[in-house]
Image (tube, rainbow, N blue to C red; front, side):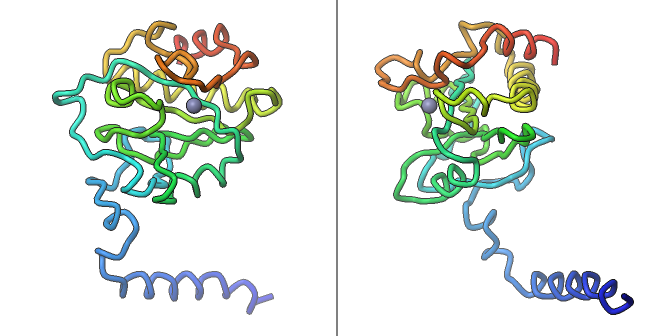
Length: 199
Ligand SMILES: [Zn+2]
């Protein structure tokens, strides 16, 4: 018992020592060149997309942010993160919300342009939020997902002065020129906007 109980502590110490020996420049956050290492949304976990999958910028300076674009991943949360981290995929979003618990990952700094809308004008002016699930599998759109996402969108709208309405909180399918259908007919916009307004 005693031995078992002591092991985690020892492991922690060893891990801490090993981490201290790693030069700062080798840490993922530093390598990504993503600026400050804190998240823009306090409840988010920083899980950065590869630097090759976004455009460094200094928004909102020179590029006003006036839209939130709602997406559905068409894959699992963990898989979506690996896609964002793969420099060959050329895709990213600022945030990814997990189905089971509404957990929020931040993958691109809000100051930077994420590649999510397939439309440069909309990419430059928006925050892109991906949701774990499929357009034709409504079970993924859990209460926790709606609530976690709505809190995030409310925070984005408050910080940039974006009206909390359907003209400014849009689906990917509403981006001009897109052939994407997400978030699809199972996404409950009325409920989502009500939650955003209450958050
Ligand atoms: Zn999309």
